[in-house]
Image: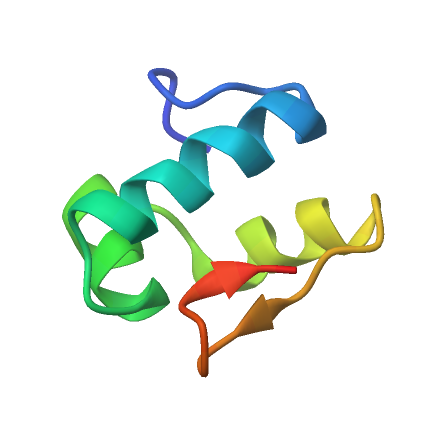
Length: 60
């Protein structure tokens, strides 16, 4: 994962949801812009029981 992205899953959740809310139309845009692997990100956040919701453009 990108070295500028928090490694801790809870901090990562907060970071990603803020970026999605304020800057990106969807998860694919965020991952492309920040050079992240979507499946790795989703897997890491699934580890703390969060999954991406396209309807709200957030991990819930």
